[in-house]
Image (tube, rainbow, N blue to C red; front, side):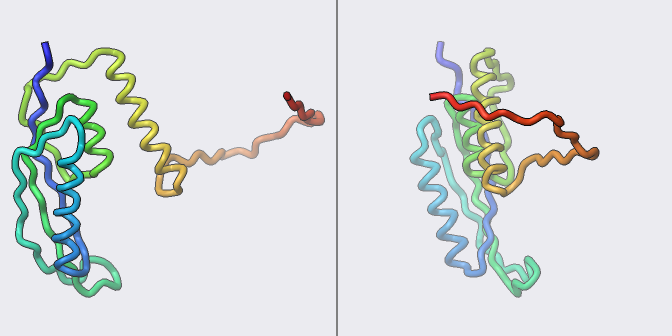
Amino acid sequence: MKPRPIAAVSITEAMAVKKEAVENSLKTLLEAIKQEKGIVVKSATFAEALRVEKPRKNIPEAYTQVMELEIEFENLKRMLNYTMKYGPSALEIMEPKEINVNLNEAQEMANEIMAFIHRYAAAGIGGVVIVPTKKIEQPKQDAQKTTTG
């Protein structure tokens, strides 16, 4: 038996210095989401773009707009991929009330999340940096290089 799709409401907010830019960016984003396999956009609602004064340091004004999607995902993996790829501001799962995941699916999702985090860390955007609190002593013996061919 095929599992029921996951019905959710996704909220995405965008900001740009020009009103047209924020409106166009959300419309472009919606079209990209509609092309995703395993995702069905049931409805899309766009709030009016609003002018915001001094949203950031050195930016006198910008425009913000919110897009709300009623969306269905074929499974939990698709939903997690959507959240990582498109970064909505919020996602509320409406149904089903329970989701069962087998071990293989859970492992695949965990690996995809780790790969996503590592891509950002490798790009210098974020991640975990471990700095030793003590000086690490190197072995006193000469290191030998070994080549294989």
